[in-house]
Amino acid sequence: MTNRKGADFERVIADYLAAALEDDRIDRRARNGNKDRGDITGMRAHNQRIVVEIKNKIRLALPEWIREAQIEAGNDDALVGAVVHKRKGVSDPGRQFVTMEVNDWLACLYGQRFGEPS
Image 1 (cartoon, one colour):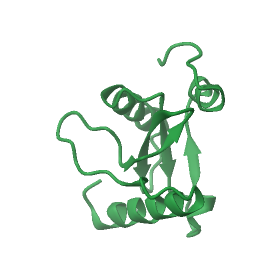
Image 2 (cartoon, one colour):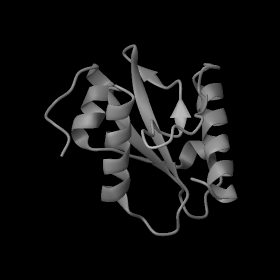
Image 3 (cartoon, rainbow, N blue to C red):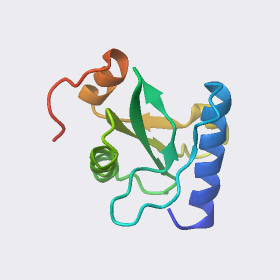
């Protein structure tokens, strides 16, 4: 995200995750050029990285965003990629939405891949 609204939302989510998980390694990620590795760094499950893509858009584009998170997870050699997207009219960072495929959700829960990303 290059716009101010997107950057502000990335900061809010990164700060919330770091505080909630008591992990100061969680932060906004520096830009990585054409091998993007997500918007948030430091997220982990089962000692494996989780890529988090942040979206603050009016129009939902979930299939596109999920594919982007999966590509970025591959770029980062991460267990999964997830999308955190802004919930219209809700400012509380803990009440925003997280979207991922069921196989990615299972990987977060159990620390191993089930099926293949499509």
